[in-house]
Length: 116
Image (cartoon, rainbow, N blue to C red):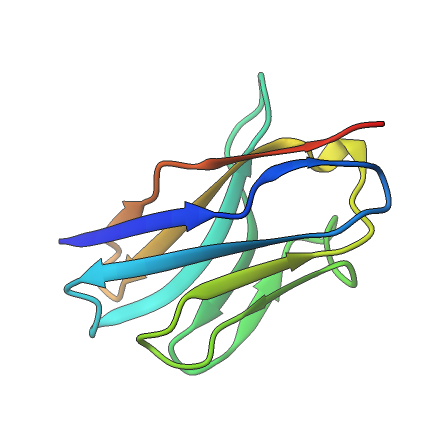
């Protein structure tokens, strides 16, 4: 079992920045990858960014160059730095952990609203 707790969401103006954090606890030592997903009203949940245990990252095309996922080590929080935010980035952001066997765990989600 893995427990994920997100923080850092909120209301920001277009062009602004936010940093989300996700802290994992429990059986975390065999996690293959940690990621951030988002779900906007009426839309499917989509991958925003992911970082593997080896430090490899990948991003959705819509956030490349604006968002950065990072973590210092397997025990540290996972961060999502979001710059130059746009109204279309508004969504509930979920932290995800994935094991090599494909098992996923999810956080409770944190709301990000980009609006003037």
